[in-house]
Structure formats: C-alpha cells, structure tokens
Length: 257
Image (cartoon, rainbow, N blue to C red; front, side, top):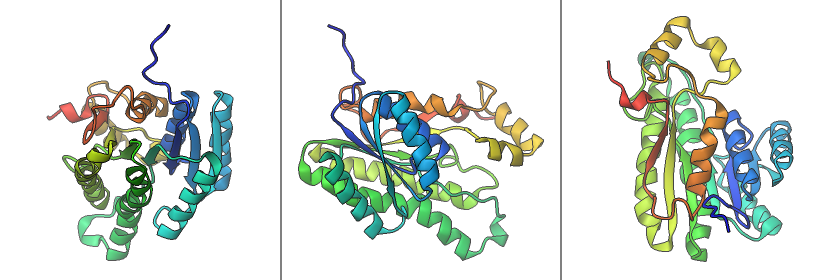
C-alpha cells in the first residue's frame, strides 16, 4: 500500500480569485489531487478556462460568480457550493490589487479600493466560510495569499505592502481563534511571480533589483506555488500546521544587502 499524504479526495476547496494566474494554478493542483474545486471570481471567461484546466488533470470544478468584497455575494456562493457538493473544507483567498502610487500622491479612494480587495475581502471570506467550518466541527484549512511585500514592506507599493502585512496578522489571529475547532489558518508568501503583463511594466532597473535580492536569481513560475497549496490544504500533510507564513520566494526573504 502506498502512502499519500496529499490526497484531497472527498474535499471541497473554495478558491476566491481562482480565475487569476496564481489562483488558477493552485486550483488546478487541488483539483488534480482529488478536491472538488469551486472557482470564484467575476470574470466568467477566465473562470471557465481554469475549470477546463482542472478537468484536464482529472479533477472536478464549478464556476461561481462573486465580488469578493460583497458579503451577500459570498454568502450566496457558500449556499451554492453546499448545494453542489454538500461541504466546504478548504478556503483559499487569492484576490489582489496593487498600485505604485507614491505616498504623498496617494488618494484615500485608492487606499480604500486596495484595502477593500486585499484585506476586507479576506476578512469577509474568513467570517463566512470560516464560520461554516468552525460550526460544522469537522476541521478545515484556510489559506491566505500574502506577499513578500508584507514583511519588510516593499518600496513603491505602500498600500499593497500595508494590506499584506495586515493579512499576515489576520492569519495568525484566526489561527489561534479557530484552532479549537481544528480549522487551520495559514498564509503563503509568494515571491515575484509576474504574469506576462506585469513583466512588461517592470523596468529593467526594478527587475535587476528584484533578481539581485533573490538568491535563485529568477522569477517564480505559477506552478511552483502548487506544492505549497496542496500541502496546506491536506489535513494529513499539515495537520499540526497553523498560524504559519510559508515562503515560496526563491530565498528573497532570507536576503539583505
């Protein structure tokens, strides 16, 4: 008999922002390891593309439309997911919004917009899906997507850095809060995983600076987040892991000048 710590068969994973580049890659990994995957996002075309990828690796997926900052939308999605599979075992929070606006030029409208998506969205999802898991009493896993900008903050992205530092704090707070119900709360800290459109706006100087601070001397590929996602989703592989911030950053966080 082979031992498989990473089998997610019978579990349902809700991935908010599951139609994004990184969220989609992690959705495929969870589906490929047996989870039924609920892909939640506003762009249905992108969601359908991820659903197809999940099905190509033998998984089962369904698309759900929601604004991650709207509690009524999230409550509806929970009801729809429960109607689909009857359960919710894993919640992954992937939505993200960024901006390089210099601090003295920052308007509070932009601050609010970024905080709405990056922080409020995470808190709302943890309230709604987390409460379901805690009340059900069968355990569960919440995985928040943080960033290397969370600690220490990254130059040029003030609001994004502040929002992701808050996500780390929320993760640790809820890990303690939910532990008695065996609901684990962890965060993944990705390094630089620029999608094609981001690579185009990175100046040569910024790219050189990032790579000079990354011991592996390269950007990450979306697939390189898949192992961390499956590990944290599995209550066999990471049953005693909660409140952790798991770096997948090519060594970025280990470096100083």
